Image (cartoon, rainbow, N blue to C red; front, side, top):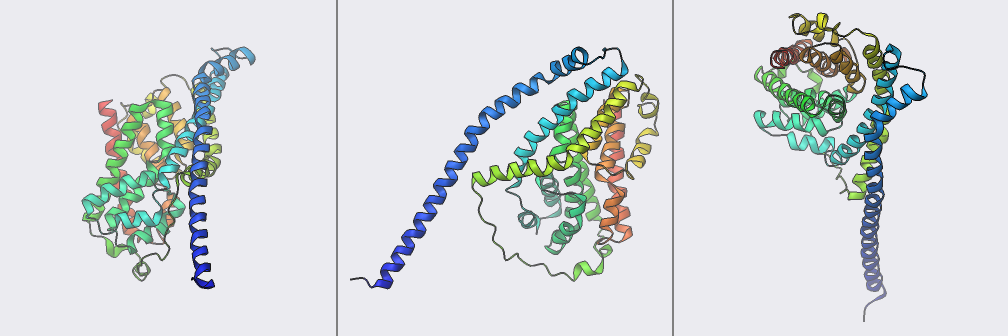
Length: 367
């Protein structure tokens, strides 16, 4: 016959198993609920998206007092079409990438990259940079975490270049405004710059140009075991990503499209060809130099890029300008100064800037 204590233990175990089983069932129920709600929402998204072009024309030229020949009318149509189009694409893609990002926390990313050979590590770091949350403000803690975890310096720089330059915002805006070919070209050349630039910096063996205090930090395993996420958790993570990212960048999107609309409506056709066209050999380096002091994200700069291309600017020159604005900025240099000595910062800017110049000239030559 079992003692009272033994019976109590058995009941506790049974209760624990029941709670766990109930939690699994609740998670499955929540996942099914999300999927059933998501299907009609996705269908509505597609119908609205396909209707944006005719609706913007009807709203501009039928309900509002504008004509297709007027500069203001062209600007208003551009703004009314591109604003919902970009925000809708951004919401959908950020949600999807948010689910992917739920598999890649910063700690897990460090573990993936630590101990990898530089050539393989550069490729992995550049690819992880696309799906890992990263911005200029988080450069210092991530950089320290990677270095102290044993990630080679060149591999760390591949991540540092890839993460801000090739993200879901840049890719979705490029796809939405220019089509998949330009988006794919940007993705490919951006990854190539990140991989080659990181590998090149690694060959220089410049670890001694890190600030001394970085080496005083002892790398250690995190004592925190990350809980396993269910699919319901990952869907919620995607929705949180939409609230966070779209909530932070929507104003930049609207402002960027407004500037682009002004360029689209008022700048004469072919005007930009004389300044940023293929015939001006100095256009690419000047565009890069102009882009570096500017501080913007992809959401704010890409609509302007679209308008510049529409007015005759060369694709290579404009992409070089955009890459310089997104990947190289003075605020980033100031923050990284806490970790890197000036020589290493200058090398980082020089190598990445050189890669951007090559991409600019190459695009202008081939396209």
